[in-house]
Image 1 (cartoon, one colour):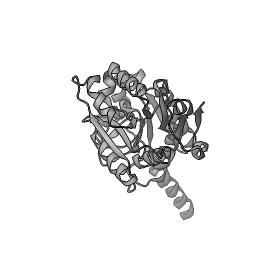
Image 2 (tube, one colour):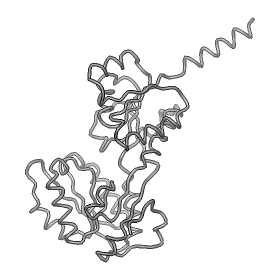
Image 3 (tube, rainbow, N blue to C red):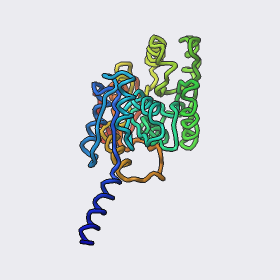
Image 4 (spheres, helix red, strand yellow):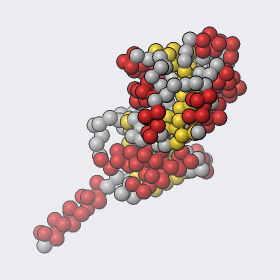
Length: 292
């Protein structure tokens, strides 16, 4: 009888320790979100429920979270995170697919995978692939100042000068970029909200860089249309699996926000050849895609 009771108590204790997990997806129609979600779904061994907030009203989301009241929430995209933080800030909240996550409110129970890659990794790849490039320009604002500071510190260690140009909401125009581009050999485009809000200015900046035959580096393959020669982006499927591992490990004392474990690399060889950009051909095996 004692053995049976012990087994029952052990089973109940294990069941009680199983956390309730909810996944909040900002929009399952976006490929980058669905890739992370599907990889998480395939990798995560526990049970979880899912909601897509793009199809729901705020009241419905609030009621769902209060009714479920999960122990752990995995949010995909900034909208999902904001709802989780608004209604259940006391819970463990994991995030992915958020551009510049540092601008969001967090708690000691916030964990996640950064959308931005490690700056030293990016600069090391650039330096190795394009050894002649010594000055790289980056456009930033108050929202991304921390990213620029990190780029500049890492650049010093690698012998690369990061030339930063600050933009201001509603006042910046293309005329101020001419002298900036006179002083650089390449332009790195980061997710900069102030610049991106004014789409016409962004296009003018990229067109000017292309006309000057500057090497353009960016984080999304859409920039290939504007003459980008190198795309370095996080692999969304790997990110989903990374979140799964973070939740399953129960390690809450490690790095709260990790850099992406996987990357996608695209090299636009056609543009590099057209602008006479020297590159190390030995490294081309590393790329997921080469545009000829």
